[in-house]
Amino acid sequence: MHEEAIIITCPNCGAKNRVPKSRVNDRPVCGKCKTPLKISTTNNRPILLTEATFRTEVLSFAGVVLIDCWAPWCGPCHMVSPIVEQIASEYAGRIKVGKIDIDQNPTIASQFQIQSIPTLLIFKNGKLVDRLIGALPKNEIEKRLIPIL
Figure (tube, rainbow, N blue to C red):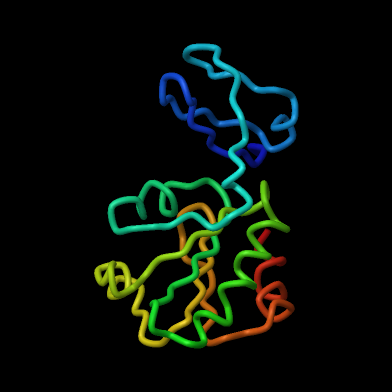
């Protein structure tokens, strides 16, 4: 069985490097050009997803991804946003957290049948494994997220 890993893009050559989570703090280097790899400080913040980046960032990611499907005009979405930020920070290195504006990315909204927002989607190894609808408190989100980790 393979150990869980994260993908780190080399800042020098752009190569994607699979680094076992147990080795992240061992000062990994790029397998192609040997440049030291740094864990991006954005790993503890949600990444902004688009239809163009969705496949690479979510469907091809080996691990757990939590996605906040939202829209700027949605009041409950603004209530969930700080919770999603907290989860991204507290679970950094264990999960990837992203946000996608469904108004700007209607194909993703249609593909995953987003009919109400906020909707949180949880993917594991590129497969949708759970969906949470509405402005849920942090403990309710964690109840559904933690068993998937």
